Length: 479
Image (cartoon, rainbow, N blue to C red):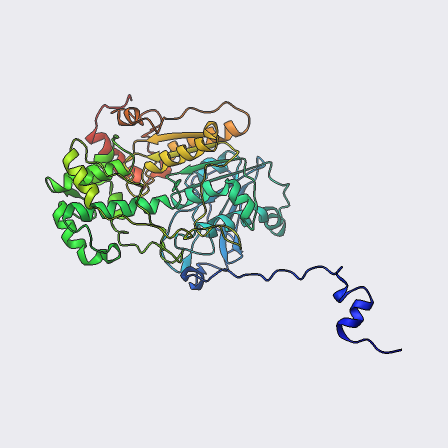
């Protein structure tokens, strides 16, 4: 008998060329590398196993620290636990190489009311919301394993909530999105969310910065100068628009600076209380102004330009001729169509917030915030309504002059109202963030503003700015 070789032998045995074998798997196409992937970040205290008790709290807690998948974490569980776990997402910390954990500002409320909380440093700094979502979710999934390893076996949480500030608000909003659940490596279903001063328009925030920049250039007389060379003309533009510009104080020139600030007001949420105070002493405009000149990659989070200002019509209140001239001269930036596309290996590099969520959300935002402006809430409302989820979103305006300058009392109320709603109560009250006449009313934001400065507000932005606000606008809100 002749010996059959190679594919002929396989065919004779019903394999190879017999037509019944499975098709070979399609080759895996790797995603391209980006600058963020090569940056090295290191936990600040990789050997830590615990952290300090909170001063003035009588409740006993277990406090565990460690490192999970390259991210530092802290977990705190009261001795008498109510079975509910709150994940906290911190805000932007810059490009620093060290990873640090931030405890929730409502920590005292949480532990005194029986909640466990957990917070990740994330495994990457910069504006890496993808890492923020994945690492926060991974920590939530590891909660019981960590507790058991530390000698306190616990049942699975009965409820899982998420809250966060600024970029952490983006993490919070993205974490409850259906797209996130479909594409994340670490999949978690939350029962409710409380984003605070959050980037609820995802990449649209960077478009607002770009719009503010090109408007500044046009009004100052250098409309066509390349936007990524901002540093070359920053002094010229600043001198044209402001008679005083420093970290604590801004005074617009007349008339160019006044025109420009009108444009900024309309880009950041429209006519509203606290905008003037935000400019005058809130200091968040300086943060926005300081990020002008972007190449659209968000410091290497993306590989291509995401900035697009084509949808903007710039408005100078009461000045049609100059508004028309501005719109005729201003640069139009266009994003690369695939700059923030869906990825094959998990979440988008800047995770999307489409308004496609199925759990109660209570979101709060200060009116004077010009870094992550109030317009983020208007975008979030539009998107949620477009997805049929407007009934699951309650939003509240807070009369703060800066970025995230809430009192702890305001944050506790938002979180506790969200939980009561998520656990079967009626929807809590909120503010209309979309109707211009409502937002422009002098008393807008009074309903949910609580100027009470408590022990955990010491040294906070709220403790700094609330007296100044009350001095500038005395008697506007009922006591």
